[in-house]
Every structure is written in C-alpha cells, then in structure tokens.
Amino acid sequence: MVLVSDQEYLGSRPGPDPDDIPDLIRRLRERKLRHKQRHIVHRAGVVMLGVLLVLAGIVMSGPGVPGPGIATILVGLGLLALEFERAERLLERAIVWGERAAARAERTTTGQRVAAGVVGVLALGGFVAAAILWDIPLVPVL
Image (cartoon, rainbow, N blue to C red):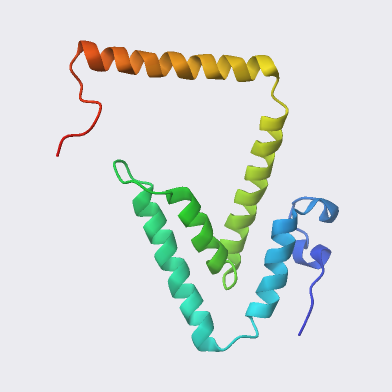
C-alpha cells in the first residue's frame, strides 16, 4: 500500500495549505486508500450506488419534487470519490464551500439575524395575504 502525503496529493495545483485541509477530506483520503484494496465487484457496486444516488439527487432537486436533493447528491459524490478523482475534487470543493458558509453564518451579528427573521416573517405574511386575497390554495389539491 502506497501512502500519499497531503503535500504530494495537493502537488502543484493551487489549494489550501496542507495544515488547513478539513478533517472530512483527510478522512475521505484515508478511506479511499482502504477502498482501493477491496474486491473489484465491491468497488463496482459502490460506483453503481454512487451513480444512482447522484441521479436520484438530481431528480429530487427538480421543481415540485420533494426530497433532500443536494444532500443525496453529496452522499453519491462521497461514494464516487472513492474511485474517481473528479468526483473527489467536486466533493472537496463542496466541503470547503460548506465550511466557509458555516464560518460566515457564525460571524453574523445579532442585528443581522433579527433582520433576516423579520424579512422571513414579512415574506410569509405576504404570501398568506396573497393567498387569502387571490384565493390561492395553501394546500395543493389533487
């Protein structure tokens, strides 16, 4: 088994400092090394499941279709990342983007949170008022 350091993995392509690599990405790389040692039938099954999950997530992300589409796509990408470099890079970008969004959300002030809440309540009130005035059904009728 060949172990690749984070520095060798990142190579010359631009990216985060090896010390700043999120723990999820580091664990994904370790799991990928273990996955490469599995039987080819197991690996093919993982790829098929990953493709099915990504496709199901795309369908669930469509308008009018209920379900956690984005989360399903990320789970499928996690499985595909065990086999394919492109899927791994996409998943890494999603993880880094999610961590940045979480950090930005933590830095919001109380005033920003109150303003967002007020805007949300006003939008909901506007929708309810429009539904009453224009006789829009709040529950879809089959």
